[in-house]
Image 1 (tube, rainbow, N blue to C red):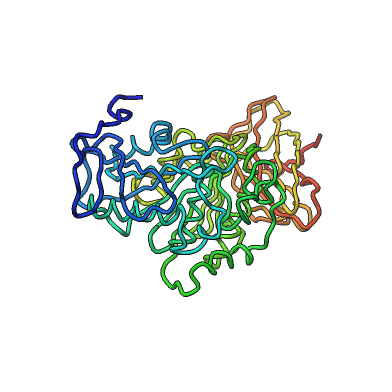
Image 2: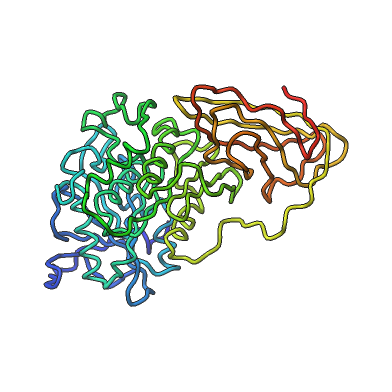
Length: 427
C-alpha cells in the first residue's frame, strides 16, 4: 500500500468550485484519493471519493467502483486494482461510500421502492450525481461510463444498469444479484432473505420484465454486463449467477444457452451470450471476488484496455491420442440447476497429449457454462475438449473439469464416457 494512493489530503481552505457548486479537498495532487462534498443531489446521504490519474486523455472514461457491505470507498480503493489500473489506462474512478445500515453494516440500497424508480431517490440518485459532477469537473466522456462492484456493490452494479441504462455503457458485477431480487428492507436482513436464501427462482421473462418496467419507454442501447461468481460462495449463493444471467439475456432477447464457453484461466469458466452478456464461474471461490487479474478482465470487457483475453493459448492443441482411462463424476444439484465436476484419470502407461471426452447428458439437462474445458453441443451427446493448460494427462495423473447445467428434475450424472474414442471405466 503506497502513501501516494492512501494519503487523504487535508482540507486546504474551502475551494469553492463555482461551476459545479461543490467543495472538495484540493486537486493539487490529482493521483491521490480525494473526497468530494456537496457534489449534487444526494438523497442517500452518501460520501464520494474520486481518484484521478496524473496522465489521462482529454475526455477520460469513468469507472464507478462500489464496495461490499461493511466497507467504504477508501477501503475498496486500497483493496482492489481499479486505481492502479487507472494509472495505466487513464480513466477516472469514483468510489461511493454507502451510509444505510442493513444488518451487514453499511450497504448500498437495492431494496427500497425509491431505489427501484428512476429519479425515485436513495442511493441511485446520489451515484448519478457523482457521475455528473465528475463529467463537469474532469470533462469525462459521457459515452464511456461504467459500473462495477463487489457483493453489495455488485448488486448495485446490476441495479444501476437497470434504473439508468442511458448513463452506463457496461457493468461488471462481482457476487451480485439480479435487479429487483430484494422485495424490501426486511428481505435484505441476514438469515431472512428470500433473495439470498438459496431458493430464488424466477423465469427469465419475469426477471426481464422487472428491468423493462423501470423505463417502459426506453428505446436506447442497453448496457452490456459481465457477471462473476464463486462456486463456493456461501453468503450470496452461486445459484444467483444463473438468475442474473437469465435476467440480462432476456433483456437483450438472447437465448439462455451460451454462444460459446471456454476457460481463459485455470478455474475460470466463461460463458458468452452474444457480445452482450458474459458469465464467469470461479471454481472453488467463496465470497472473495474480485481477486487478482479480474479487474483487468472487466476493463477489457468495457473496452478500456484493449488487451486480449487472459492467458490465451497461442498454440493449437496437440492432436489427441488414445489411452486407457477412468472417470468420476460428482453432481451438486439445486432447484432447476446443478453443477457437475468430472475427473479424468489416465490409467494407461503413456501420456495423453490432447484430449476430448464424449459423454451422454441425461434427458432434460442443458449445459449453460463450464470450466477447464470447452463443450459442444450443450445437451444430448456432448464432447468436452481440453483447454491449453490441461492438454496433457500423464500416466496415473488426473485432470478435472466441470459445468453448470439446468435440469427438469433429472439430476443424474452424465454417463457413457469415452476418452479420445476409448471407453472409460467409471467409479
